[in-house]
Image 1 (tube, protein in one colour):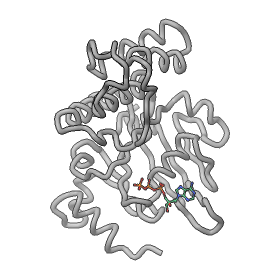
Image 2 (spheres, rainbow, N blue to C red):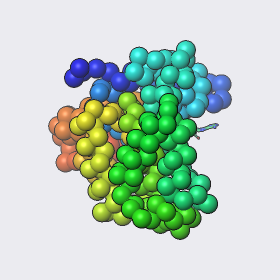
Image 3 (cartoon, rainbow, N blue to C red):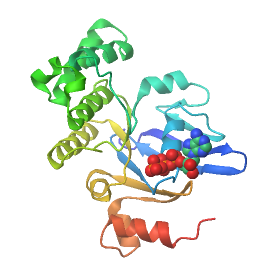
Length: 248
Ligand SMILES: Nc1ncnc2c1ncn2[C@@H]1O[C@H](COP(=O)(O)OP(=O)(O)OP(=O)(O)O)[C@@H](O)[C@H]1O
């Protein structure tokens, strides 16, 4: 189904302290095969929103539904439908890359043959070749990031939630990752990304949501928003929306 919603975020709010909203009534959808990016300045509420959707943080109000499952009532089913790659994720440095993929595949898979399938996919995605037989401690930051991304995607979840997917990667590696995300989306995987890199977002996302001070201020395709704000690029849109709007 082309317009099938894989994620419905319905008025999600979080108060870490009573009366202080880190995110307030955030509402948006992600369709099957769509790449949706949350963009916003530091402290806007991106990670808070993503962690609530990932069932790692309890929402104060609202709900999110992933592949028909509510984070409130069916969090374990939600966890089966998503993978989450945090910005500052680390892998076990003393493990070999291949053993890390096998270990994670066994955690996520329902049986041995599915685990083997995941590892095969993970090997292809990370493109680390023979280096998979080396300890992760010997990898560059880019290689570690590729391994972690492969881990997040090898199970082909309905929704992959990636915080700053290309952070720390050089141009070539970042390009490869973006192409991979687009290809997987074309095959039907949905993505929720968070990023500060506007060029990346403009290139890779089908739609973006601009968030500041916990409020989702705008959603649309990069082209729609550029047109609406008579801007030259998404960075200008972002500045206009975040700097010029009077947010309480
Ligand atoms: N555990 C916590 N306890 C109290 N306040 C928190 C906690 N985590 C985040 N906050 C606050 O909630 C707000 C939103 O933070 P969040 O980390 O979601 O922003 P972000 O958009 O992900 O920022 P960045 O781009 O810097 O990662 C900030 O004001 C932050 O200080």
